[in-house]
Image 1 (cartoon, helix red, strand yellow):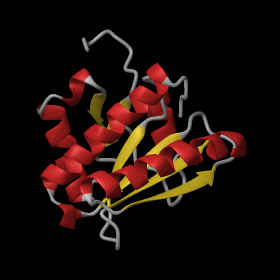
Image 2 (spheres, rainbow, N blue to C red):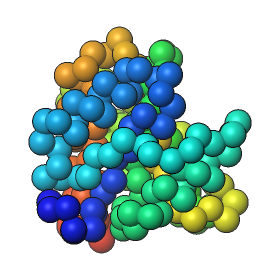
Image 3 (cartoon, one colour):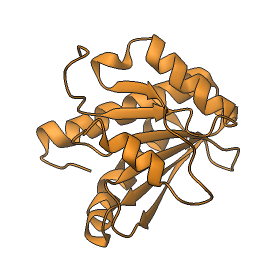
Length: 165
């Protein structure tokens, strides 16, 4: 993908600089060739306050990706990773449930990774967002491979199945 082309998929890292593992994963993806699949970019806007994601959404919308931006987070929970879809509407959130749950089930079956799915419907945001909470215990290689598989999955849904999250 060249500098002037619009990214089909945007992956944002360093949204919360204290989430060091997510930042490591983002840097690794940015430096090691995920650019053929998605645009990986360091968050470059001011921080949001508390639970608001206004600045994040404004930053993401400036790239105008057709697929919901993916934001990398770090969290030490009981799962290897969690995928949280924050839809613009209840309808979009409902339509995303089956494809995202299928991805999570496939990760366990094919790779032994415990990836859980969550969803929230936000009120009147500019765009939907997909958060991936990565557990540092899974390691850098497994985390980057998961994000790469997820990116390819989202692109396949859009290109081959006419499903855009």
